[in-house]
Every structure is written in C-alpha cells, then in structure tokens.
Length: 184
Image (cartoon, rainbow, N blue to C red; front, side, top):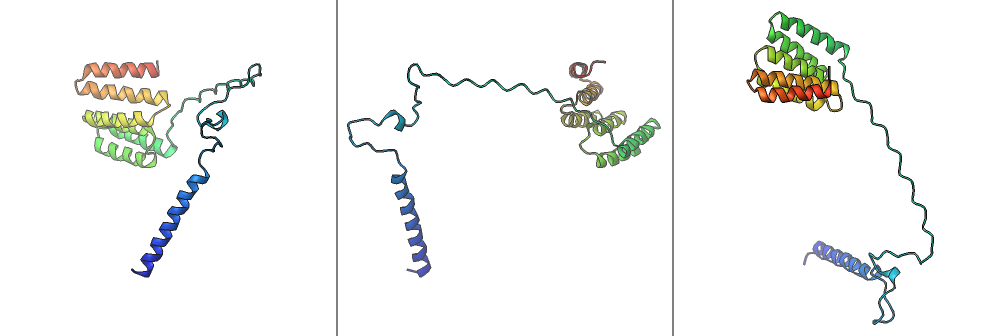
C-alpha cells in the first residue's frame, strides 16, 4: 500500500471511531434498573406539568401593532424629468423614434422608476405598438409595489393597451383596478 493512502485510511478510521464513541457519551440518560422507566424529566418530548396549586407565571401582553408604513411615492429626478418632457414634446411632433430614444436615455438614469416605464409605454402606444406598451405597463406595475398612484397609472396604461388590441373586457377590468387604487 502507498504510504499516503495508509495515512489517510488511518485518519478516516480514527475520525469515524471518535464520532461513534461520542454517541455513547451524549446518549439518553441510563437508569440503574432495567424494569423501571426513566423519570419524566429524562424523557424527550414530554412537557412537565406544574404541581397542583402552583401559580402560573403571567402571560406577557401581546406586542402593540406597528403602524403601516406610508405608501411609497415615485418622482422623477430632474435629469430624468427633463428627458421625459423632451420626449413628450417629440411625441407630440410625431417623431416617435426620437421620443423612444430620449425615453431610453431617461430609463438608463432611473431604470427602477415605474414612471419612466409608463412614459415609455405611452410612447409605444402612441407609436402604434400596443403589445409593447402592455409589456412596459406590466413592468411599471411590478416596480410600483407599494405606490398606489404609480400602480393606478400602470393599470390605466394596461387598460389602454388592451383596448387598442381589441380586448375590451380585460380593459374594463384593468380600468376598475386603476379606479380602486386611485379614485379621482
């Protein structure tokens, strides 16, 4: 046998023996008589009952309810707001491609702001791509968690995209969700 293999085998054997010998040290307590069951305190899983007439400790009062956190509110940073305004002007002029590029620059500044995604979705809807607008509205809805005003705007865009696709029943349901979140 190789010397390294023999040393490794010896080390593994010693480790296994140490583990197995530890089982007997930390096992359940032993009783002196085999016919007598171990006392209740030695049994695992048995809850000891207080003696009759003993007083119970007082039950602690429940913790007071924490107030709900204030709903989130999204705002555009000044650079992103300037780009969104510029894109809206480009969109009103009929230059949808340039408006999309401007909004993508705003998106690179604030990629987790649902308001930028909503603006980009509105541009896609105006450019005649309701499926893309729907996807962007869903992304905005995902990012708007905890902000009812942004969620309502996202549901409004979802409703408009669905209506543009001819899915009127789903659009009505989306409009109802928007109205529930942010009644006007």
